Length: 378
Image (cartoon, rainbow, N blue to C red; front, side, top):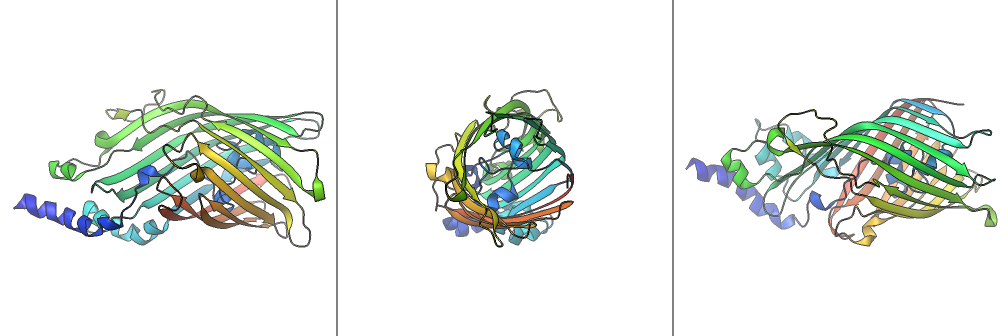
């Protein structure tokens, strides 16, 4: 009797809501780092990324950082609309996590918290062609959902480690830049479903049951070319990057934090990206208008449609402090804005992330905010 009651309490809510479930979080693209600024403008980063984007986008863009900067405090929080509506139920109910999650069947619950601090950026000068950037980066992401086979998927990833970028300007006019970023990152992750059978057998959610850990030492390469011709005052830029050149496998035990858990967590796959952008100062209220089209995550999009790798967007600067943004990310509209007060920088964005293998399959609407305290050259 105890067996059947426990089984029914989990299975019945799932059975009634499973028809709404067409995809799950395992089909999304997992990235080591995501930028609120990027997503506001459709996810552009290969041709337009600055500062923190140097570390996981295109390292050659370090030569485009406008001024010297030291970041003291830099948290970013990203959630989806389901997490916002369900967060209270996960923390209530006397510890009945399984039942509470079952009530959200058909929904992915996404939370990501990142920090890039401390961080130091040194751009080129009139007498120096090279640029460097350094930061300690942490990223924690979880996606909690119910799969089609009624198993609970808790894909949680925690990354922490330093990154160092070096970039150099080539040619007499400095129009061609190349760069590299070296990463040392420790990953603690869970990527195993929790099934009804596990529940009945009394299997716990502990790290010793479903956890994996490992370290990766890898690097990125990138290049940027600003074209010498400027029709109608438009500056064109082309760029390309390779991320995780060595494969992004967390199979090293250089850092070993927890004993008696699994190894080789989810890898950060080698990926390729390229794109073009155009920049023009329109005048009036609109300055530094940037429009771009990029494709990246090529290689990190297992079995997914090529259209999931497409990003396009626009950014402008108004009155020196406000930067409105619009774009399309994986086929979904994005919007965002940045406020730059020198010592204080605030960015917010909303975007759609594709959870199925093809654009239009299952949108996960997400929201992000980043607040940074920094010192920089005035």
